[in-house]
Length: 424
Image (cartoon, rainbow, N blue to C red):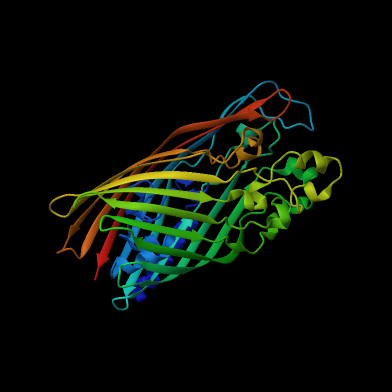
């Protein structure tokens, strides 16, 4: 247990200084290195402790194990402004392309599971979300609507104790408590003070913190000897308010974490080859700070409706839509304890063309992920080395920000990950 406490503390510290993750919106494209090697599939194929993040029932099948994973993640974010600047109070930016700074992050996660008997298992996992991270220099933003060094920094960390019960027919159910920590900072928004219900709590207040809780439910159901159905539902995670940014986020700094659900099939076509299909939906629009649109709220705010201003009960948000992602994966168990994986996922990114201006701060526009990975067992099957790689090709969204200007948001992502597992 002392080792596990040290593992969790190390993961916590590393996660807090690494706030960006490969993303569908701002949820990770998968949890667990084996799942990420198959584009985030595997809700119906339990193989690792981190299955609990998607399907808590899965820990009933993975044995006694400890896992540590670490990835190097590189998101490349930019915006490109075309057209002459507009006169205030319209949004306005200097023409040209601006790249976000800080392009490399180290991302850890960890987990452990214990089989109590033939039916019951418990586990503990540590993982995170991110992706709403940008950093634009004061030189790049000078002369526009932003003021000085500009950007946002969002990190979300989850600690999930989990229980699963496996029935005699190899069906299983599971439940996780979600204990969440959130950290946020915004800079460069001083020029929006006139649109805020609390200008002193709008921007440049350093990192603020919030805490919350939710629940994660899951099941595994054998359909036949070759096909397994699995699913998980992660509830909305209710967070305490970010008081230092109550003049930015709708409902006085409320920034809950949206619910998501995943369902999938694992089809063992041969003794070596398994084919996977997962479908995941995330309800971003249910979180006012994320889902509320800029218009008509901005116009109503300028007309005197305080509730439509930044921080108001119906305040300006990022305008994100709900997101559905379809994921495909394959796994081949080769000779000499080698396992090979590959995957592809596609989702319609959540940012409408009408919402590009505010999303310069959070350009979560990724739609596709291509992945590959492998595992190698050694020490008579008691240890594993795991690897996963991800490439998300460039995608952009373009829309108007004023009568004379348009902005194009663009992002691409790379990730390499290495992990170690101990089976005992």
